[in-house]
Length: 293
Image (tube, rainbow, N blue to C red; front, top):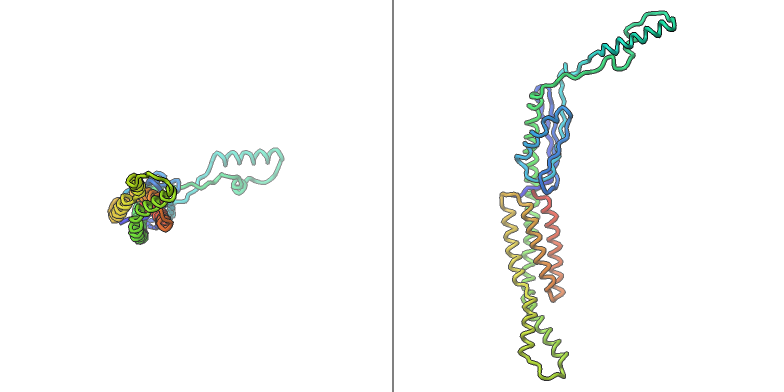
């Protein structure tokens, strides 16, 4: 079953005091391209997170956003810059002496200085953080895969309907194309007859041979046979378990090549219109195939 490359998942899990929140979005891409965005304290886990994603996804631009919150009560701490406090005290003392000021220098005077007391973060346990992050990323990756499969079902239904439409109309083209060589021959004979009405000695056998050569050049039966083969192959790829996006994209190019050839050989406006219609449908298929993993 095919999978779409466009999907979204979000999972939040709490382990002890740590809550991990993971959001994953995936987009179209020719290759697997994983981007990680998270707090600086979690950059050490980037490669491990990417490995988890790569286990279940083969293609697509996958963006992972990680948020981590630690509710530990002793996490926020403060420390004193003793050197800065002492320097500030000496500066206040000098001002008092130089200006002959009265009064004592108290604690509140020193606390007005910037960065005397600064917050400090308690060093976090990386194993404890990873214990919260890992299952969160794994679940989010699985959910992303499930959404990709669901979107893939929708793509499958759409592509199947479109390829059925192409096959149905190809049968109409095949019916009309069978008349092309005869039409070319008849038109050529009428043209030659008009241009050589007063001429003598023209070999009717030679004229018939030239008409047959021209009619043979306008024959599109081989292109139609190849198109039927491409349709069968298209359906086989849709039903396969392998990654289908690249194969289908290549096959669409083959479809287009055959339609172009038929269009160039078509001797009837109605046939040309049918080819244009099928090329338009093929373009819609190509756009949808860009979403397939």
